[in-house]
Length: 96
Image (cartoon, rainbow, N blue to C red):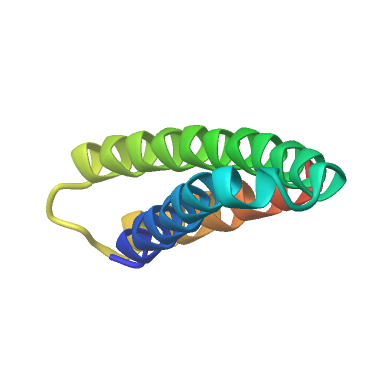
């Protein structure tokens, strides 16, 4: 499913954040103001990633429930799933 892509993207974001952590000690001696900005940005990034992970888990659980309701699929189930996914995407975009 396309949701695996979201999981991989979150993994890449966390890898970038880990790279920033490794670079901080070296930069600390050179530009304290820059380090403060990086640390603040990193904290904001961690908060955003945590929010995205929570949204992803919520959506994944909802999709599992839809699958349990419609194990064989069918036209009605597919349409319901598409509507629910579109509703979630609208909701998450609206809460940004």
